[in-house]
Amino acid sequence: MTMRSRWLPLAVLAAALLAGGTLTACSSNNSQENAVDRVLINGEEPARGLIPAAADDDAGIKIIDLLFAGLVTYDQQGKVVNDVAREITDSPDHKTWTIQMNTDRKFSDGTPVLAKNYVRAWKASAAQKLGATTAFEAIEGASEDGTGNLSGVMANGDYKITIKLKRPVADFSNRLGINGFYPLPDSAFDENGKIKKEFGQKPVGNGPYTLVSWEPSSRIQLDKSTTYRGPRQADNAGIEVKIYADFSAAYQDLLAGNLDVLDQIPDGELPNAKKDLGKNRTSAVQATMQTLDIDYQTKHFSGEEGKLRRQAISQAINREEIIKTIFYGTRKAATDFLPPQILGHMDAGPKNQVLKFDATAAQQAWKAADEISPWQGELKITYNSNESNQPWVDAICNQLSNTLGIKAVGDPKPDFKTLMEMMDEHSFTGPFRMGWSMGYPSPNNLLAGRYVKGGNGNKMSYANPEYAELLTRAQAADSPEAAGKLYEQAQTLLLADLPSIPLWSPSSNIGFSQHVGNVTTDWKGGVAFHKVTKK
Image (cartoon, rainbow, N blue to C red):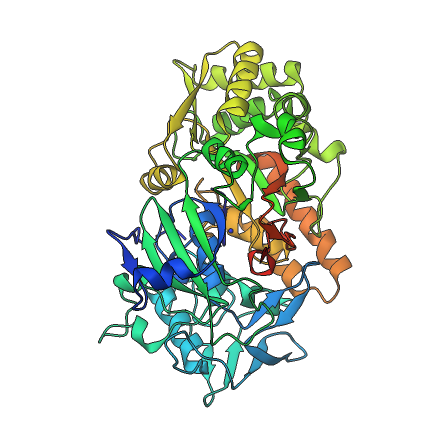
């Protein structure tokens, strides 16, 4: 998985909200389920259930985004488009935001979507310290990790929301379309006003699809909503998410006609995809950054020693070679911490030499770290093996071993859910595979969610007040040009500290069957599933 705000953005995360047995959101018999000609897509088991603000994994957010609708959504270019919101205005100082809602929106259980459904959901999510509340941090009453009482959020009547911020955020409306800002119906809450854990097993949403059933580790069935009135109207009757432990099996199912859309062709199959699929392929650059993260609490990776070792590992990795030989050129080597299409991205230059392969500099940095505290034993790189990660991890291990004169080995785990549990427990002994799929089209989504203290993607325990202050100033900037310069300054600090090691931005390599049409991508490079048509 890749986190976002969904790695896709808390110091304290919600407990995993996983289902047991077959889950049904509404009554329907088997003949009714089988009568729906759903688009068959690949997926993974959601790591934290289907409560919107509890999810910080791609697998869960992939489903949640289909079940729920925010005040806004985003077009293919990443521009904010109103959904449940009818009009959004802000004060001249960008600190007070007013949202007028459409009055014809309903949840799938028929109840109206009111201002209180948003406000109550946000406040409860922050109070319960759920995993995707980092984007609340600018709201009055919120702490730096987005938790707190959110005193700045108010429902003024049935269809008006007022949000007061602690500081100016000129693009705050960009945040309103991510999963942390989705609404919840009254049925989601217990008698004490808390979000019920079981709601994550049978969610009632207001989006383009409704949940029919969830068979853990097998499939999730969704039908087109009859109550959704927003811009993401489904062009198909429903979607069935087939859960795979191995993407190679999904590719074989695609070739056999047992899958309609595969949103990531395994890297090892890329040389065969043209012959296998012909014109039934498409691709797009993802708004995603893949990294190796190292917890500051890990032995040998704190203080000056840790900084030197992270530098050594980064400069011992030949990114271009791996992209050419493992990924067949379908990646862009990292030159900073942002995907190349995002405001504030910096191309290669003097400031980011730490991300370039330099064997001599890597050896010198590792030797200097050894003088502080000698390295002993293996260097383990932990990754989830259910995706196409082993080849590139093995390649990095070979490069580190050959350049640094150590024994670097891959440490596979069955799925990303296991890695997330290890992140919560701080149980890694070395680097671990990580990534971030951007949830909303602002550099702050990644740079704050991943590297500010309290960000739900900050699994390294990194904190730099000067960096956080630059992000604050960037958010208040009145023009994209001014904001971009401040984001670049902030990244210069990240390049010096290397809280994680950027590797590359991937591309979506999408395959689809002859049974579907109109397979297009969204602003993040992912499949726009609601637009897929069934032939």
